[in-house]
Image 1 (cartoon, helix red, strand yellow):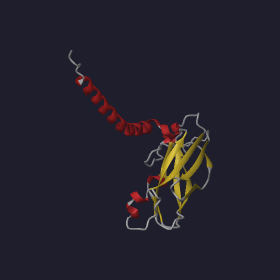
Image 2 (cartoon, rainbow, N blue to C red):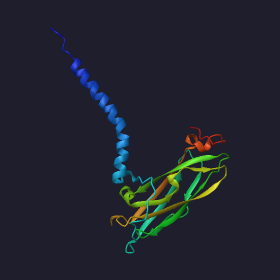
Image 3 (cartoon, rainbow, N blue to C red):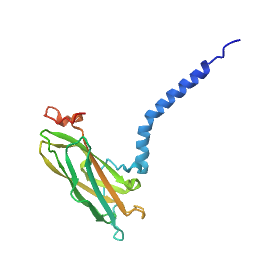
Image 4 (cartoon, rainbow, N blue to C red):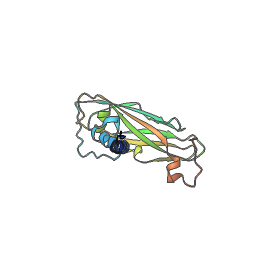
Length: 188
């Protein structure tokens, strides 16, 4: 009796394994594109918006809530100047966030925004934001960082409150601004 030939099955399984491995790597960029297109996951644009199309809707009022927190490994103090504001869609507003580096060394940070509910991220437009670039603070330095924004008047009626949350991350080790300077180490 002759042993069955398993070579074709082995080839098929090997090909399927390689394809699944490749698909796993492709998921991250595909997910980012999907989130950018749909506004899911609360991701906001990383590009400055313009107010060309912003027509103020005096009939509606939207509550914007502001949250801020440093990453648990980040020793900075980071908070919004105000906790919430009422805006009309299309109305341009400026608020500030305060950051302080209480350490004895230069640090570089990057703020990452998130909008809730996630679908509202498509309608929250930042014209100027400290999150567009890294923030470098010397030892003991404090900084007021502006956020200029408007809510697109096309925001669906179901949304009356939008929460904008920032998390501040330590990127000192990955920043050319910290090269040659005494920098804070988070113990990573």
